[in-house]
Amino acid sequence: MKECNQCGKCCTKYGNGGLSATDDEIELWDIFKPDIYNYVRDGKIWMDPDTGKQLEVCPWLRKVPNQEIYTCDIYYDRPDDCKYYPVTIEQMLNDECEMLEEKDLAKPKQAQKTLNKIMADSRPPYE
Ligand code: SF4
Ligand code: SF4
Image (cartoon, rainbow, N blue to C red; front, side, top):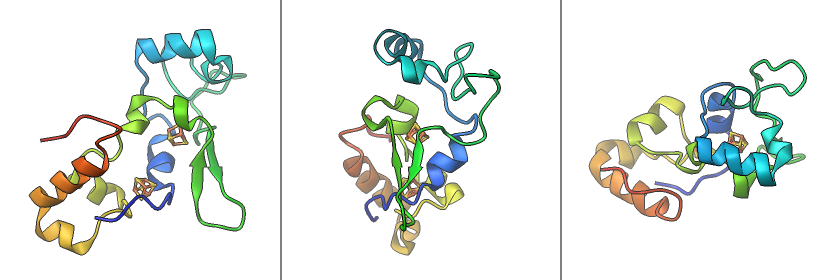
């Protein structure tokens, strides 16, 4: 299992309607982060502030110039849905997450434990 290399695949895949935010997260954005709240409509993220329609690309995903690396403009305020990723080895395989190595596929249970350790600061362990 490698560290995340910021390839941006997960944000690209889920940023266009595949993410959700909790009522608490939305309320906090409403009070403290109006710029983020602007992209919420009827409890859904990320919506075009002008048209109210679902955006095709997450508005906070930023490509680092001259590199194939992506960052998140709201990293410290992003929803748990983003913070928790990746959760399972199966999900990583489906998404072609670049943290995954060949040896992880040979021992998926061990790989899940390693992933849980890497993600310990971001989410509860997945058993
Ligand atoms: S909010 Fe940030 S972490 Fe979440 S999909 Fe967008 S760029 Fe990625
Ligand atoms: S797909 Fe995996 S390696 Fe790429 S940014 Fe997401 S977590 Fe990191």
